[in-house]
Each structure stands twice: as C-alpha cells, then as structure tokens.
Length: 152
Image (cartoon, rainbow, N blue to C red; front, side):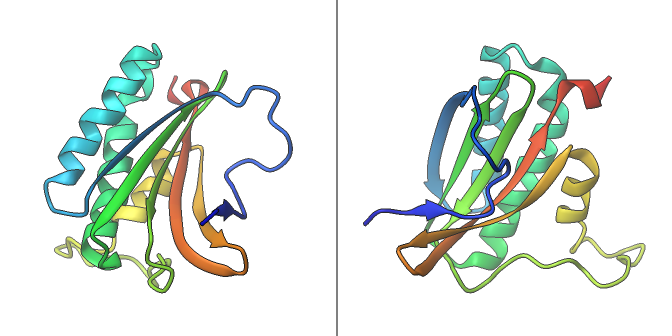
C-alpha cells in the first residue's frame, strides 16, 4: 500500500527538504509524555532549543487528541527540521474522526476543547492533512510549524 498526502504544510517544491525523524507508539495515555521527550531530543540535536517549550505543548495536545478521539491502536509523530522552520505532524489511521474547530470559547472550568486552539496560538502555522491510499482517505495528520523568528 502506498500512501500520499494532500494539503501538506508547505506546497510547492522545497529546495531544502530537511531532516526527518519519525516515532511510532501505541495510542495510549502515556504516549504524550514519550512524544514530548522525542520532540525535545530532536530539537536539542538540531540546535533549535528556542522551539522546545512550544513544541512540547503542541505535541502533547495533538497526541492527546488522537488518544482521546481517534480510536486507533498506534500513532506516529514526525519531526522535519528545515533551514528556517520545524514541522511536527501527528498521524493516525482513522479517516473518519477529524479535528474540528470548537464553536465559541471554552467555559472557565472546562478542561476539554482547548488543545487545537492552543496549537494555533503557539505555532506559526497549523492544519490537518488527509492521508490517501490511491482514492481512499486512510488517515490524517495534524501538523504545526514552529519558527525561531516567531519565538524571539
């Protein structure tokens, strides 16, 4: 089975495709913690320490959404380090349940429904990419892009 993505974080040809790291894990409650450590290790190795705090928050929320809503056994976290940006994508193979924007603001005591709004606030860009197998949607990636120039 070959898969492809539409509506990727960047369209067009990237002259610097970047270094890509991928982590696959069970979709369980403890995976968010492991995903934070994975992303942190990649950013330290890539000398992108200014991005660590926001990356950890965003990857926690995107992984937690998969664990709570997607009903899949595994997920993957992909980190691509480019010259001027880092793109993190969390993939699951549930083509039906897709993230949606919450209507209105969360109530003061409501602990749910804030994650993707927080990702949008912290990231330079974010979105959802559908993953295709020929003409069938087989999953999705929720991605976010971080830039050091936005962290200054």
